[in-house]
View 1 (spheres, rainbow, N blue to C red):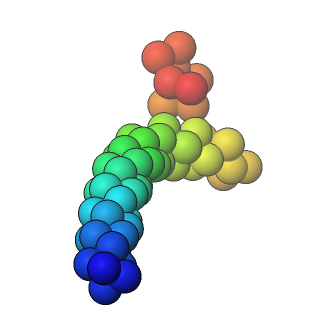
View 2: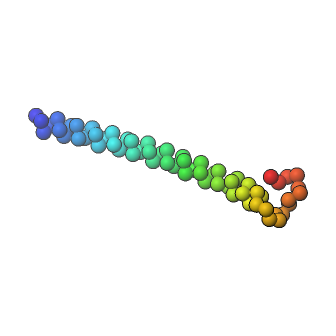
View 3: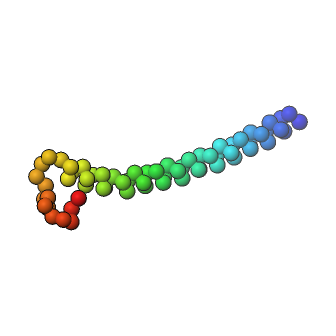
Amino acid sequence: MIQYFKNILSSTLDAFASIVANNQNEVLKKLTTLTLVLTVPVLIASIYGMNTPVPYKNSPYTF
């Protein structure tokens, strides 16, 4: 009887761990996408923030 309940508990914990791992993978995918999307504006803003001559510096359509 103890072995039977031990197997049930083990299977339940494995299923729970699998669900947690899948949720973690989804969150990491979303965070990776967000990071990649935010990288482009930060890169552009950092280039225009340097004290060097940049193209279209006096144009009203740039940062």
